[in-house]
Image 1: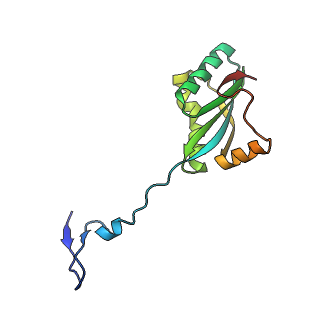
Image 2: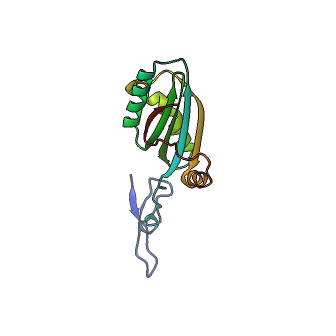
Image 3: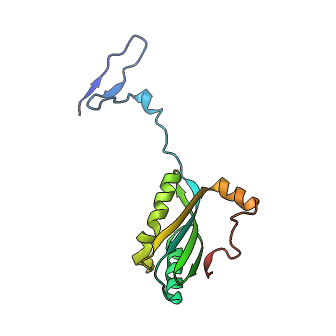
Length: 150
């Protein structure tokens, strides 16, 4: 890496520039660097289904998933399908959906989840979720914060 000092015009001080990097920024330009965008909260409803699984095993697996995953809200289940609701922090909808689509597979071994496929996904931002709740649609389940049979 080669550093060279630019010659200053009268009344200005010279700035240092990395000349080995195209577009290397000077000291004054570095102050304009923006911070990375903060994540937003997204409400996720993940629906999965597959071959029938004994209910006690399924409940234990979903409880383990609830313990392992931050922002977990509620899971409902039956022998051959389940629905998991939780909050996800992500930069945008694409990131939140991508994380949600990986959730079941990534926790399958550690939580001993059944080899089911994802059959539904809903991701909405926090204001939309709260607007729905206020209008009486898609509100919180009667039993929040746990794993319950349908």
